[in-house]
Length: 195
Image (cartoon, rainbow, N blue to C red):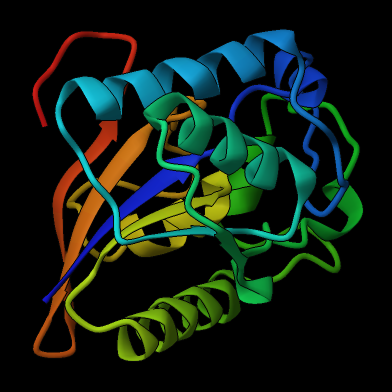
């Protein structure tokens, strides 16, 4: 069995300003760096030890993984997996989130956007590939909102692509007998809660 902890990256200026960033390669802002550090401290406080740290190739995720690693004082090498990159939001990339955004996302109505079934297939395939490559490991995977949502929409009742995920939220899955299960989702490490 694999234990998988999917962590959303820390805050960027685009997040703060409600801008869809998709494949834009934005860095963390100062608050995002502090979120990542506190997330690492949270894991350390609860004696969480990971066999591997894996990241999306985008700098906001990689930087979050590096800071969490540093805060946990483990300094494990970070493995970059290209298929953990954020969704392509097509014509909405770089646009302000507005009132119609949630419905457009739910129904895949944004021109040139990576459609929900395509995204889900990519992410499930990537996570299965990682679990096959590293069986029976506890994995910390730092990635993006819609990468995590691509898993949760099929594992958590009532969860959809318009559901909110905190920056640095922790989402705990297991993978056993070729099946994913959600243990807990959208844990806010800044509110005291034992994993």
